[in-house]
Length: 112
Length: 111
Image (cartoon, rainbow over all chains, first blue to last red; front, top):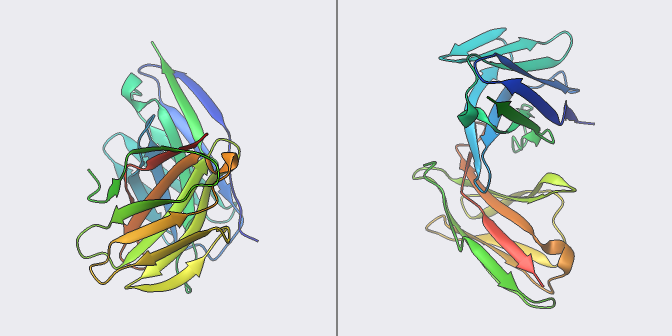
């Protein structure tokens, strides 16, 4: 079955890089997404990567995809206190209704 | 701002009652999804509508129902409410097969 796993917590110092990891089980995944949820708010799409890509960079964000290991990571460079939030990994498979499977979310805590 | 709106923002009600949550999708998006987020269950997919028709069902209880209207807005109806139904309810919209855009959510508290 489909499953997306993330570690629950990550604590980093302001200015350092953060790396949030995600593993998934379905090798037919087409799109893989990272969402950010700030307290009391909805999920905000940060970035996504198509399964035929290995890497995508967007300003401070770098997404790495290792299809062989079914591993996705999100690197945030120069992490700021405003990056403190819950980060969700999600993936979709082709066909059907494209309902994404979400991980439980990683709570990123940035301290000064 | 994702372009998806949800009302109300907060809802407090009693057990046994019925409530309706409303969602307006982004302009041009035909698909609407409903999710429930609670501390113990995480983000749970409830149901999807596409252009007025039910497209997929997830972990939606029989006490819950939804519909999508001709103007594409959607409503989620929750009835015979229980304490355990207290959660954040999110609506999302998308072009089929692509990324979802989430609304700000409705926080439901059942007392």
